[in-house]
Length: 529
Ligand code: RAM
Image (cartoon, rainbow, N blue to C red; front, side, top):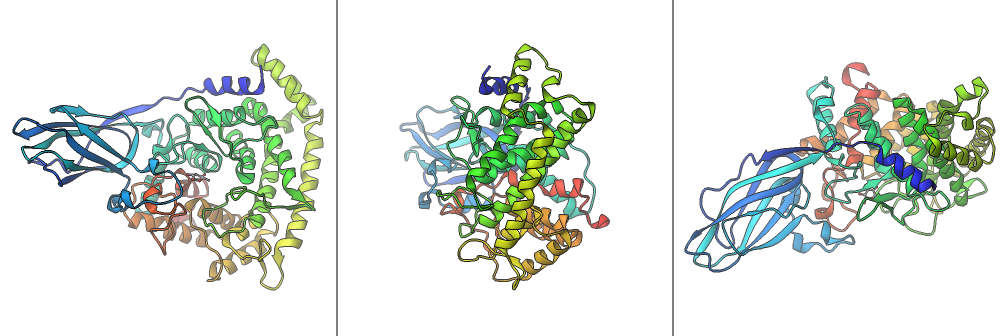
């Protein structure tokens, strides 16, 4: 078996059930017939993912022309108010959720079968003829998710805390399909950075560990010939990695695997995938010069956040240091007992002959270095690069981390340098307080980045402030009427978009689902601060 075949085979052993439900619109079914130029909006009462079916008939004289209709699927009211025609952004219009249909023979059932993400469905009658109109007798959706609400624990807390948990879970649920998708509207695929946060939230909610395992194996399977894991992957027409690689996303494979082993105790899979984790760490070497990360030539070399002005060098260094620590923890989880018992990975019990041969190969790839040797090397690089980070990025005058030739000061550089352990938690708390008060600092724009900021605050013991930030940031989306949390949210500019228009933004985006993780895992609740 090649690596790809082996990992693919294991991914296929993860059984993922898709749950379907038939749901009806709560309001909007019109009584009369709809003529050219009229429209109707149906409200399903919550955010759903699935395909929609309409029963439509004609009213008036015999239908003497096609009825031409446009159906729009909108995740929330903001999307409903946007005009698709006006979109001129840099990512495909194809993501705008609309269909234009010719209905030649009525009555009929209309269902294109395409999966949409929506709460609202709007039907515009573009044209009929002067002799007939249309009547919509029924509209319903066949919804789909691989999350089972029966697995959800009861969440307690204040009203706001319960709302945050409910909306977090709804967001995660609707992104849980055959894989953890980033968003069911767009891009509808497995991205590694998003997956890291989904796995955290899943561990305190749906506990669909098979889905996490499947996604880990899929990423391992689609690595390139050097072992580098792409930033995202596609399932169709065949499983394939994207040709986009990001410094941070590749490294996060280590972190997701560590968390998976930690919460499931599944060391067998951990050992299978260990090689890929080590490869991501090794491959990060290409970016280093004098122990400092050098920005890649492509714009998207490292993600961190969607603020397009962000200089990512300092954050990337912090992410590397953070992942070194995750690798050490993972190695410890997997091998500390083996080392104690005096056996090597090669002696790990294998499930069958193929697996035996595969484990042997793993041994070779590790260059014969045992866990102890690797651990020493990770610790050495970690120490050297932590020191280099402090020398290069920390500015003793402002007492903040700077990034890039322009010595940019951003919230994300501080958060990641703190999480990477460049300074100790006591100084980290001072740094984070300073940046939070600095009106000129470059701000994060995604819940994904806010997650990191809160994580850094918790590392520094800033529980009360972290709680307040969670409530104000995600709480603003609740007050905005969110059924699910958004891909982008800038409280000072709700229409912000890195794509050229917010009609293309995703309003159910998995990387925003972590308040439930903070509240459950860190007990970040009003009563427990
Ligand atoms: C967005 C995707 C995804 C993210 C990438 C980097 O377009 O939707 O959430 O991981 O960018």
